[in-house]
Image (tube, rainbow, N blue to C red; front, side):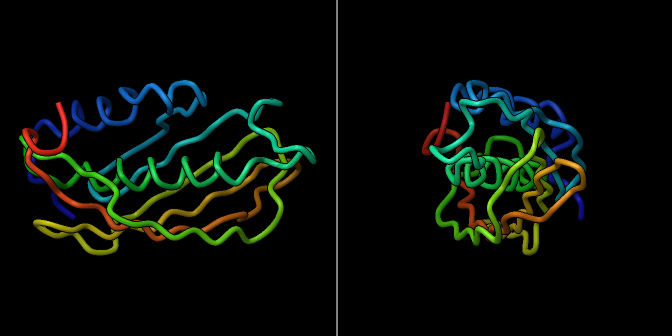
Length: 146
């Protein structure tokens, strides 16, 4: 896939690191390329639900934000992506010290981008714990963001 923004690396770093909620979760940008993004969260007790599993909301947030960042690698300057819809399948109870996500754009478009995100928990071994499909709207900066 090809990016439409020669400065996409700067935009991707802004998208990923500029969200206060994402910062509060401790999510880190690991790697990205046009149409692709990988991220992770070091799991702490505040990421867990009442029974000690990684909270579904943490998994969903990481999937959504990583997919959005993958989409942001492809848009022109002056545009933003906003999640229009997402569906997540929680495949198994997530436990571990690290949560990783890999997102890939399935269908780039001028107005809508569809991406897929896979979430893995790492304990003794890496295990697929969730899979999301994310549809993102491509909007003008004036309409959708700062």
